[in-house]
Structures are given as structure tokens and as C-alpha cells.
Image (cartoon, rainbow, N blue to C red):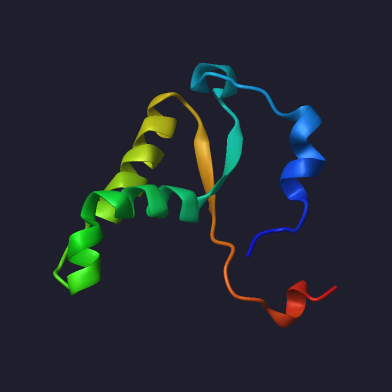
Length: 87
């Protein structure tokens, strides 16, 4: 889903930064990116229905890393279309 054209829109404003540069700030993060990256470590379990928490463990590890650097992550779950998003 996502916001159509967002990456192109912010292209000129983005840059690489170490988390230390963001200390004492709140940063919005696409939570599905972290969950998707974590899911790669347990694709077999997810595909076969075996119990696993590796994908959420990865995402929560990232939250911990941000907090360890003094950055408060705001996890954004952009999913299904909601009527309030229509406008």
C-alpha cells in the first residue's frame, strides 16, 4: 500500500544518518519493513504454520536499538484502505 509517490517526493530531503544524530527525537518507522525483514529469518516456519516469533523479535530488537541510542521510534502500520484515508 503506502503513499503513492512518497519516495520520489522526499528524495531530495533524505540522507544517511547515524542514530546518534537523532538522539532525543521521535522517528516514524515503517513497521512492516522491519516485520518483513524479520520474516526472512523464519520463512519456513511462517510458510508451514510452525510457531515462531522471530519476525517480531527482529522488529522489537530494532526498537531496542533505537531506544539504546536515545531515539524513540514511532511504528507506523500502513495497511488496508480505511474510509478516513479517502480524502
